[in-house]
Length: 363
Image (cartoon, rainbow, N blue to C red):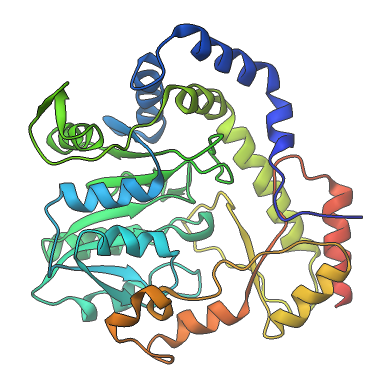
């Protein structure tokens, strides 16, 4: 039996008629950029998250870059970010000339709130939180620290569409909640797409200008902007998937519970869940000190796995100029050596999952 780490077409087939109707509607409309489909999706996604405004963008990375920029964070400013996040989170900082200051993760793979204050300096301007793998970060102390030190709070929600902390949805704790709709995300488009949600009307207005060459009115460029517009086709398809997102997330929870209950190999460390922190299981991530051997063994069994992520940002080649070395962030480095993402996708059958589990237990 061949098991891929992710399968996208089964979700498409579940709602194929709805997707095709939405796509045909856009094609027939004759309007393909910043039209009624984008406005309708922005309204629907803002309502889903509980925020007042949603600004559709070209990608989740642009959501991060433009949010940092719109909040006035730039050259020489420091932004706190967890040391085991995906590189895009850090790029959102460095693309604006700001400096990432890394904070180690906790046992739930999110930023360790007990280590945040020690990293704050007089140059710190913001905390950029990542809700990694789909589990909400411990937001209550993070919000308190940000308020205490007068710091901006930005959330990277690329992997947490619909996840809550103490009943409040991720993306609604800070000034800006940044989302990616890359196809593999729980709320994935059929190409690149992203968005920012906020309750700040002025910030929303600025982001709308920034995404469209810095203009409210065509050819009247009020600020320096970029081209980062969510297109009509992706917006229409996202509107379809948003209607089913809670059900799709619930399916992933069922899959996660089966992994939790049936993986019994003592060599494998299962993911932990913090009380009050909901996960939508964008990834189901285990750890194993013999990770390479385990991954090779699973590959021999035709089971595909992935590593999220094999190189922590402080050791990435693109950030050599920051001067970090092996051993500077040992927890992130340990996770990079041990984590392994198991197959997890919409439409995964019990037979497929039990085959993966049986192989894991036999390792």
